[in-house]
Image 1 (cartoon, rainbow, N blue to C red):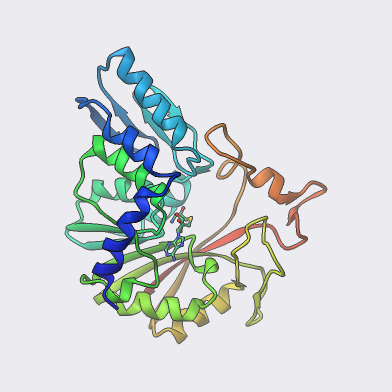
Image 2 (image 1 turned 180 degrees about the horizontal axis):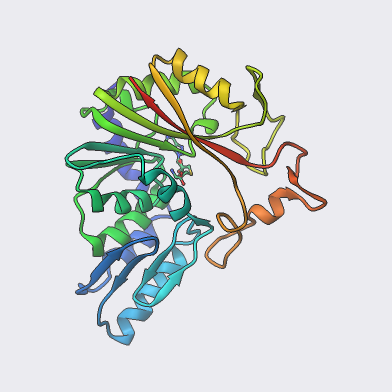
Length: 297
Ligand code: SAH
């Protein structure tokens, strides 16, 4: 597969009729001097004119939904649906990215990749086929000015990519794949010798070697295919060829981590759960819980 060609072809997605007006607004922004501070909240600040602030706030509004963050942009707090600092901080203690080639598969608007800059990796490449989230990334990176590469490619392309990686993050993606073991094999092929994969997945409780397959939706999400027990998730990793698979943590999703905010379009966790029993999703499945895994080849 010639993924360079796929990536180039996909640049035309930025001309879709829902994306093109965002790109035009982004291109029309004035050159603004700014500084940034990367912490739990990624902050971009600087002295700007009222007219520039209006231009930026209007684009921020048009760029909804903001799912991953939070960000503070010239004084405007973007209280994203997810407080992504919770997942990032949970994992950060397990990795050292200095001088490493890093991939973030399903990188969304790049929140984690911007956080990773602090560890001075050699390269960061984000894979995500969403032109909307790429536009959020391009907006943020216009001020942060990192050399992170954002490819409009998916997990299905990574093994054919021209670069291999020392560390791959694949967070919040695996249960969206109808072929999780194939996806894991593809991630394995994309790692350099001594490479490491950080993975998270929804899981169900239990010790059986099984996975839940939602009939239609899970927590109102339509494209969720398999929700394994932890042991099944580990089995998948081993069957994909990972040698050493370690469970780092298990965490139930709560309203601190995911909830409705004004930066979203549509519902969030509070309406995904059974109103009479927060331990169940609206469909009657066990409520969202994630396992965090580190896998070595
Ligand atoms: N990694 C982030 C975001 C998870 S949301 C986190 O853990 O918080 C899932 C992301 O996967 C979305 O940004 C979505 O656009 C992206 N995605 C959709 N299809 C994909 C594919 N085929 N390969 C990789 N990412 C994909």
